[in-house]
Image 1 (cartoon, helix red, strand yellow):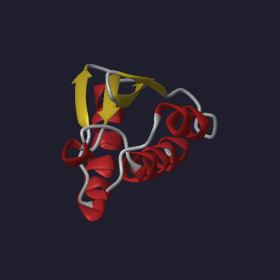
Image 2 (image 1 turned 180 degrees about the vertical axis):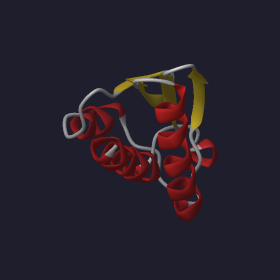
Image 3 (image 1 turned 135 degrees about the vertical axis):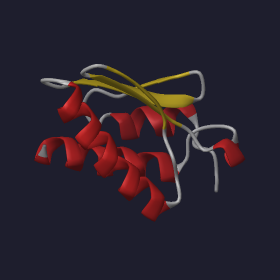
Length: 95
């Protein structure tokens, strides 16, 4: 998997809202009504991540979910990260 350049990452970030690039990863944060809603979304993301064989670095505190995506094998951001980010966005939109 080829690591994307900073300009390629910036161009792709323009297609998804709320994500930013720093420290060789793309990051976002979501807030939900409560812990149950946050955990429910995390569960749906987990199943999709497993299907894509690409797993996020994430943390959850009560109703807040923070997600970072990077491809460790490539030492940076790749197509896999943007594919999973778009999947996450679709899950969030449906929540």
